[in-house]
Amino acid sequence: MLKLLLLRHAKTEKNSATGLDFDRPLAPKGLSQAKSMATHLTHIDLTKTVVFCSDAKRTVQTFDFLRQQNDLASYLFDHNLYLADRETLLNQLWKQQGDLTVLLIGHNDGLSDLASFLTDTYLHLSTCTLLTLDVHLDEWQHLSRGTCTISEEFRPE
Image 1 (cartoon, rainbow, N blue to C red):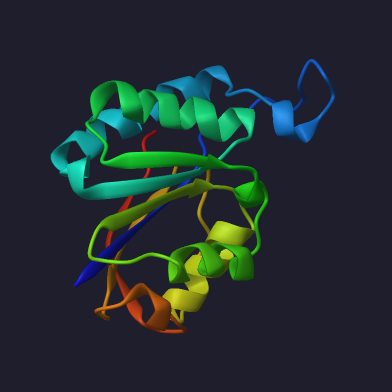
Image 2 (image 1 turned 30 degrees about the vertical axis):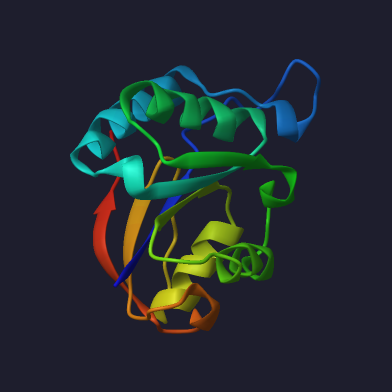
């Protein structure tokens, strides 16, 4: 069975120094959340996980905490994941081969929409929520509505 982890970035500042949404950094609460999330993920063997992360400042900062505490198989920062919608996220997943676990680090509304679609139930991912999904398929390209179930949901305080 395949595994998919969806992680929304940690809590951010309302504004950035540049005025651009893309450049918003993590807030103090977000820094604490990201540290807690990184610690929580140490119980998962991430050496068999490929990570796709939006290249926005807040997602990269969230990822940096994970990278410091966990061994990762591989990771890629992708500008196409910045504020990506469900279809863009699905296209990324459909390209995957093999049985490596996939961790997507991104933004709402796309992540919540994807989670809702895959589980066929309404879900809303708050900041720094990790949703672990069991994918009831053998190949990523068959991913579609209702093909996943939630095996874990975690959000640090």
